[in-house]
Length: 257
Image 1 (cartoon, helix red, strand yellow):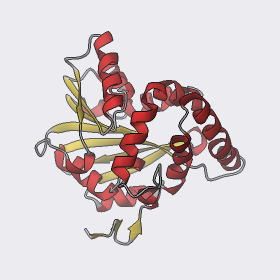
Image 2 (cartoon, helix red, strand yellow; image 1 turned 135 degrees about the vertical axis):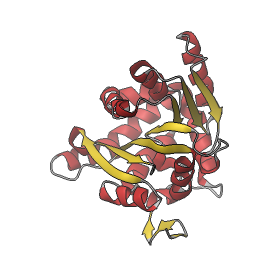
Image 3 (tube, one colour; image 1 turned 90 degrees about the horizontal axis):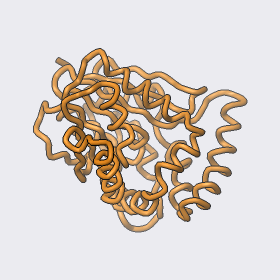
């Protein structure tokens, strides 16, 4: 595998260059600050901006892991824990560890799981996916919903996830994507570039966050390109499936036994 200057075999991940604040700080620092700023409004905005369709995407992603009956799951870029909570309800694993770089998002997540009595089943840690502290071959499965495009170094993050997965373990990624065909492509472009920033700015008061969202989605490698990146980072049996006319894409990949 050749990884050089943010590429795999020459393939560039342009999303690494998209920054929330376009300052001299690195992307990880900027993304952390952005999510700390919008954390209190994040859940409401997420479901409002997706018209609630994201619930269905999450459920389909979680159920794709049912065949391996995972007991220890890593939820990457867990945010306020929505995916982790739904995963526990649907799969009933022994333990879910949610990681994120935003301390404020994690604090909200901890309060949510406390209120529903799952604090012993779902734990949260502040960690950067590019340098995980877990041992090799530790988790049965890993999940990531709408956070992989925020990685400062996609290859490093994917390699670290692969390292902590057990042989035969499965990775499930949900990521927003740009529809390919008329008229959905045009409608999505209008909605993401004009309406989302306006609603996000009105509710959260963060101009940067909801300008960054459509830019990062458009720049992120999609479909076959993302599958090639996963394969070249060591994953096997890589495939993808599009939801809702291509607005969301699910990627599934496994660690070789």
